[in-house]
Image (tube, rainbow, N blue to C red; front, top):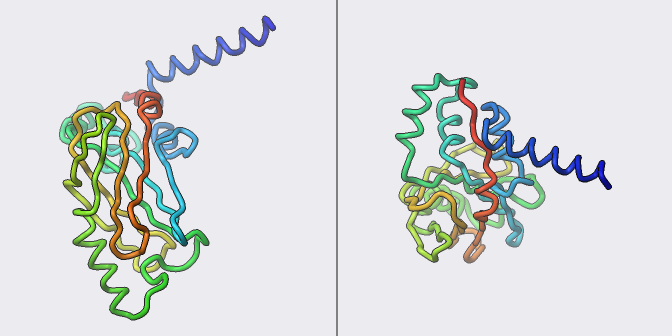
Length: 201
């Protein structure tokens, strides 16, 4: 019993030290993308799997910089530029992990091009974010990453105004082209509170 208590205490100290001292850029990215940490949530809707990836500001800055070890001053400037928004990816894939989402159950070639147009220009108005207080915010930015059928999923980059970073965040997507209805994906406050610090040299 004594050994078990010491082990638990040791794990707690290690966890707190990572939170306070920070982890490397590569470990930070892995942590954010790890489904077990709660910032990456998904649900099945018919033939589709819908996933939302919450992107904390340091993660967003790392992905934009594409540099494994950005300079401290430059990185701080990037963080400042990104403040005030919540960033997410919305990823839509087929349950079979094969095929083209844009061609799934279409009746004509025009349906295919209508989907491309929708995800490229029209989806933004159908996306919103509800926080823990119940306040709903419209999507202020969306970008459809075209893969031209080379992947079995499509990705929408999204941003919403952020009043409070550490709160429940529910993505609402009122689909108009895939027959999904209203998609709801929750990133919990408890998961956000566990995000470790990023160590900068």
